[in-house]
Image (tube, rainbow, N blue to C red; front, side):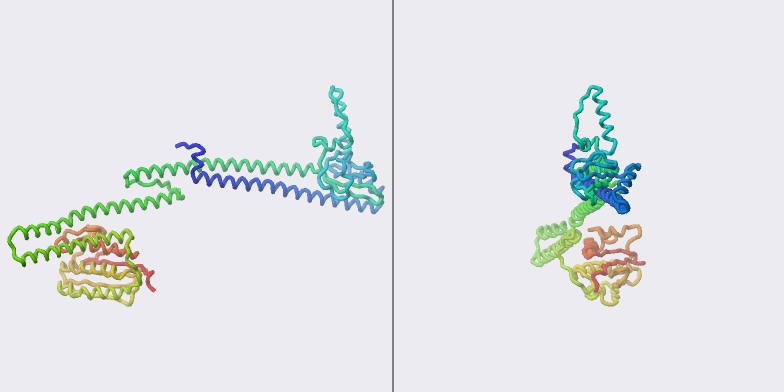
Length: 494
C-alpha cells in the first residue's frame, strides 16, 4: 500500500520522525557555527600570543642597540621562511624596512591591536602584479591604474592578517603581525567537514525516517486488516506479532489477550444459554404439568393448596437459580457492587460449620473443623460464607457415597503466601479421566451427580467469588474423595 507524502505526514510516526529530524538539524547547524567560531577564536588567540612573543623579542633588541639593531633584527627575521609580518615606517607612514610592501589604508593610524583583519601585500608581490598588468597590455588588454594599497584591498591580490602597531620613542612606527591564511584555511576545513557530516547525517536521518516509517505503516496496515476481519465477526482472528518485542508487538499481544478473553466469554455465554434452555426446561415443565393436573380434575381445597405450595417451591428454586446466574455474571465481569472490608475468616468458617452441623448429622456425616489461630482477609463476608456454604453442602451430599464412615473436614491454614481454606470429603471424588476444571463451569454436573438435587451452579458461584477476591479455587484429589481449596491472597492480613 503506497501512500503520498501528505498522507504519510498525517501519521504520528511520520510527524514524530519529522520533529526529531528538525531538532537534529537545528542542533547540527548550531554545532557547526559553534565549532567554527570556537576554532577561529582559538587560532586568533594563538596568533596573538605568537605576535606578543615576537614583540617581546624585538623590544629586547631595541633596548640593546636602539633603532639600528632593531632594524637589523627586523630585516633578518622578515627574510626567514614562513616569517611573520614586520614593518618599520616613519612618522608619516612611509615604509622603511620589513617584508610588507603595501597595507590597507588606515592600519598604521591607530596604535595597538588592529580592530579587524586587514589586507596587505608582501614585498615583491606588487612587482609581480605589475608584470602581469604589462603582459595584459601587450596582449591588447587595458588595465586601470590603482592607487597605492588598492591591490591590498582586493580579495584575490591581497592577504588577510592581524597585527599590533607600536610607536617607538622617536615617533617611528613598528608593525608586527601574522598572516591569517593558515587559520582561515583551517577554519574552512573544519566548516566543510562539519557541513559534510551534517549533510551525511541529514541524509541518513531521511533514509531512516523513510524506511522506518514505511515499516511502521506496514505494521499498522496489517493490524488494521486484522481488526477489520475481527470486526467482521471472525473472533478467532488475532493481530499479527512479529516477535520484535517492540511497542507494536506489546500492543498486539495485549489486544490478542483481550480478544481471547472475549471469545471465552462469548463461548461461556453460548454454553450458559444452552444450559439454561436444557436445565431449566425440566422444572418449568413440572410447574406446567402440576398446574394442568390440578385444573383437570375435581379437587378439594387441600389439593389446590398443596399444588400451589409445590408451585411456590419450584418457583423459589428457579428464582435462586437465576439469582446465582446473575451473581456469577456480575462477579466474573467485575461489576459487582458488593463492598469489601476486613473479614475475620476464622469466625466466618466457624459460623458456616455450625450452620451445617445439623444437616451433616441428619445425613450421617461427620463434620469437623480444624482452625488454627485468627486469619483476616479483605473481602465480603456474605460472599465468602456463601461460597463456603456451597462447597460444604456439596461435600456433605457426595460424602454419603463413601465406602467408609462419611466425613467432611474443614481446615484453615497459612501456606505459600496464601490463606488456604480447604474442605475435604471422603466420598468417591472426581474420576481421574475427568477434567476437574469443567466441574466449576455453569450447569456442569457429573453423571453420578444427576441423582442429587441441585442446579450445577454451586462451584461456579464459588469460583466467581474467589476471582472477585483475587484468589483461586482448586479441586484436588482427596485420596479418597475430593479436596476443594479456597486460596485467599495474604495481602489483606495485618
